[in-house]
Image 1 (cartoon, rainbow, N blue to C red):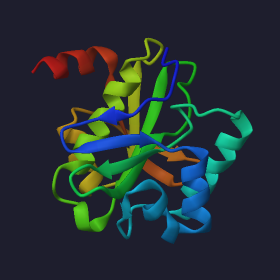
Image 2 (spheres, one colour):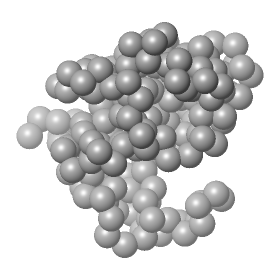
Image 3 (cartoon, helix red, strand yellow):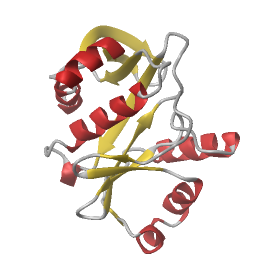
Length: 184
């Protein structure tokens, strides 16, 4: 089981655990964020302020960060910039499935950074032996997220109804498939 929330390093990114202070500054006075934390905010890093508010609520409820509720700040290390948010949509369900979500600012799209982020989330999730599958949902049809998930080796599982997003396409990678894919 993942016992503590830790940063995730990739070739170009640092996925920094989002702490209560990060969220408070981002929601209340984003202009101060760079001065306090040293990362420039790239416009469009977060597609929905609702995600920040949800995360703030979950952090306050739990009184300690959890990798399953706290988002990760996607930091482009070379540029020292906050370019996106990523994370899990809750702890593993009873079947051992956990859902990932990620977003990258428009100025940083098309560079493989979403794929790098999604792979990092998958690797981190599978460090927990209770996780048997990683899921993701996309809007139906072809879109950039579909390309990201295919590159990461997830398989399309069909359409499902999401309580928030309505009809979505479900993608999945099992632990066994991940281990086989990682060896390639």
